[in-house]
Amino acid sequence: MESKSTTNIFQKETWTNLGLSAIIPICAIGVYLWWLIYHSLPALSAWATYSVLPLQKGSHLGASIEFFLYDTPKVMMLLFLVVFGVGIIRSYFTPEKTRAFLSGKSEFAGNVLAALLGIVTPFCSCSAVPLFIGFVTAGVPLGVTFSFLIAAPMVNEIALGLLYGLLGWKVAAIYLGTGLFIAIFAGWVIGRLKLENHIEDWVTQTNVSAVTMEEEKLTFNDRIVYGWDAVKEIIGRVWIYVILGIAVGAGIHGFVPEGVMASIMGKGSWWSVPLSVVIGVPMYSNAAGIIPVVEALLGKGAALGTVLAFMMSVIALSLPELVILRKVLKPRLIATFVGVVACGILFVGYLFNMII
Image (cartoon, rainbow, N blue to C red; front, top):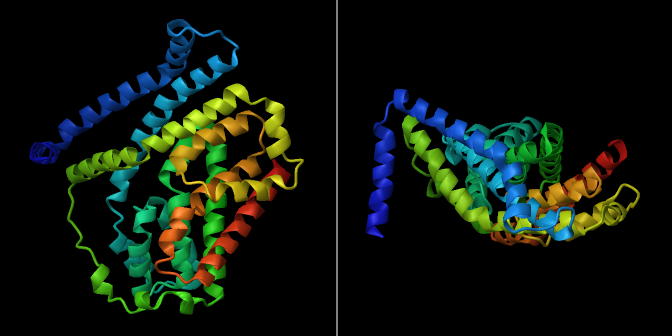
């Protein structure tokens, strides 16, 4: 344990002592190698599937294995690049700065700013309680707080980066716009309902200084280390969900006929959107794990609105996060939160099934 800690300290000191003249060429070489490997993945996955194994081209198993061998390194490489880059950006946005920035903002303007900040601010389900306490005790309105808590897990850099890399900029832009709409709308509605008395009493009695964290002064080299630490932490936490999600997506890609998904999750079935939300809520995953499934569903003929509703319900209304939030919210406020967000997701699902 001691040698591992010593190695980490050595790595951080090494990066900290490097100058920009050394860091820029290292990063440039790294990006070039990443690009070469990334663009070789289709050929490598086909070669491994049909030459190394070998499996028959056109077979269900062959299609599934090729999908898995292609998407696994592809998603992992996208995760690495996105998390590292945004990890550096995130080093400028501490929870303390976010809380101070949102404190005292008017309702609608605060909802918009909170939703936008949620995209780049460090957040996970485990930090929901301390962030919620810090925001409320600092005077951030309840609705503004919820706009942040909805946007942060749902419209984050991992979701947008993977959607862009796997499905293109149009799907990523649609997801960004609709996710922000839900976060802003849900936060505004919750704020107008004046449900502050449904926060647990101990939260409002908490001293703001008790949840204050000391802010570090970071150099650019420190921010490089911060980005690398974000890669190790986030990929170390989500890789199992990524593998499971890709495995499910590979099964759908290889074995599920296109007509089946079109009939269940297509535009013609009015019940497909609410059913996808009901199925998505009990599931526990994150953006990295659910997006390969989304990719496979869209490839098999599922409607975009239905798939977006499914993805958003999995990420924004997961049971584990609701259980964590129960520590600070009374049941009525949790029920209101779920109902308002679910209505926003249903609206998005039906809207895009009508227009696309």
